[in-house]
Amino acid sequence: MTTNKTNNKKNETHMTVLVTGATGRVGRRVVESAEAAGLTVRAASRSGAVRFDWADRSTWADALRGADAAHLAYLPDVGAPGAAEAVGAFARLAVELGVRRLTLLSARGEAQADATERAVRESGAVWTVVRASWFAQNLSEGPLLDGMRGGELVFPGGEVLEPFIDTRDIADVVVAALTDTAARFADRTLDLTGPRLLSFGQAVAEVAAAAGREITYVPVSAREYGSALKEFGVPEGEVEFLIDLFETNLDGRNARLSDGVQQALGRAPRDFADFARECAEANIWKA
Image 1 (tube, rainbow, N blue to C red):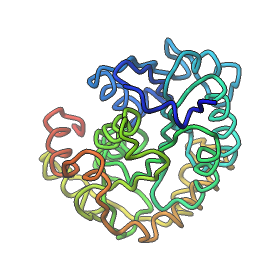
Image 2: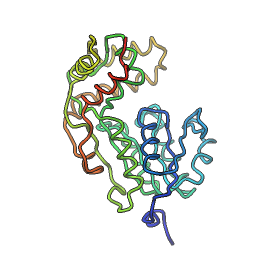
Image 3: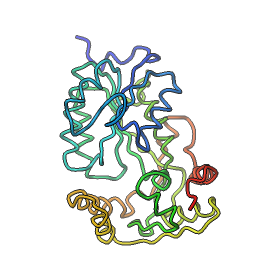
């Protein structure tokens, strides 16, 4: 009997790829990279043309049906409570519906994500787990952007060093894994980082220099940050998860570089300075 694991060696030029979280910081770049590679892309989100919601299982089958591969990005976080159960169920359904390849966006050094990664590994699909370090685009998109534009980033990163990675590199690696006819990335975990280590203070300083304005970094404890999140209306259960995540994942465990981008793409990862310059030229951090 031919299985998904042996079926994947055919030419993947005309693949149809389902991209979950297609409007997110990584997801929309996966869509762009996959389209640039000539793939047929099914961009799925809660409000898009291809409707998909992790919390609504009735949306799963229609999103998956007819896809050859899928990229999984669990919201709110790959290590959040309930993530492993949902991702595992989705991955098994994908295999049942003929999806041959899965990539999972995971977080480097996040022990809370172990169960979710294991659920994908045990799904029966050809899988690649993409473990990424802290996104450079977290400073140009999403909840931290208001602080950057306001001239002050309050965040529980301390002085820990992080190998900030450009989400475009993550997306290119995801597409390389999904279209991998030589099985170089089949059933593997890829560790992705940027090319150098920066503290959050140093990263903010580089952004400020590129933008030509003053932006300061104010380190706080994870508990203090959590209290602020509660005041902004973030549910208590999510706040407690984030406090635990920041206390563990931002403890210096990721203060090292890897060559995952070089292995997958045959080139060095983009530098944070290039990201900062491009965003400044687009007036992303204009007050």
